[in-house]
Image (cartoon, rainbow, N blue to C red):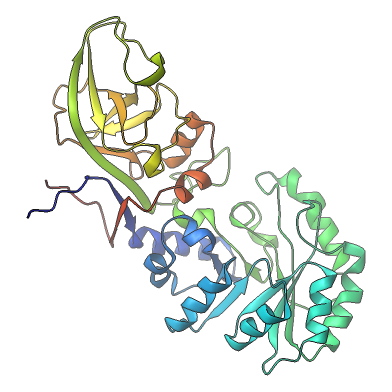
Length: 367
């Protein structure tokens, strides 16, 4: 029996990922790079993408099981757990697999002090500099460093913080000043900059930078596009038209009567919906590329399909290629039209979408 599948593909361009890593290297002014690959490499697939990050000095992620799986795939460089550990059992696993850990709470320091390990580990002490999520109080840094230094479980100590508003220089000045004062006189390497920090503050990024979003070809800055920063999209979500409808003026398209034609309109039906990760909040007018030209969303996103206005693309037909975001359509733009953020769209592509990897350029679809 022949196999029929929806022509919906998330194309992952490893050459673009390598290029973006090079951009980080150029911006980071000699700092080591810990590439952030949490959330399955921002939805791109951890084991699909990590070979393209081989030139990074390490990888940072949230999930212990993923870190262990990387070790089993013979990844030998530094791995950093960004939320650290929450029990002695987890700490022993981390130690056994030679994984570094963030310590962001005094209780974690206590766990280190009371746990006997066969192998000591690298620890990043995280300082709360105003974001008020994770991190120890600035006034406690010196004392906690003294305790960590005295612990046999700690092989090496680093200091880190996270910049919650690095998009603007004004937003980063206060946290940077707090961090500098908290770490005054302490001789440990420092990790400060995320993607926005790398781009805005290459001179203060610290000894180790932690880029995430920019690696995947998305701008973290509200006033600059990825293209202007020489970042290339790694994921391109592609489909095709599965039907074309000629709709008279005054007719509704899709659910809930949110789109009504004002003139005779050609409507293209695209094999992609919210069950695939396309944002259900996308509004009429959201850009979609059909046959290489600009079309717009027309009607509510449904579970398996979207409908687009292709009136001005007369050559569009069943089987014409569709780009939902990627090469010629920044995911940032789709996110803006959806009242969302690029992170959510990239991380939200579901398992029923077929992923393919390529090293250069684009792919063509055949039925």
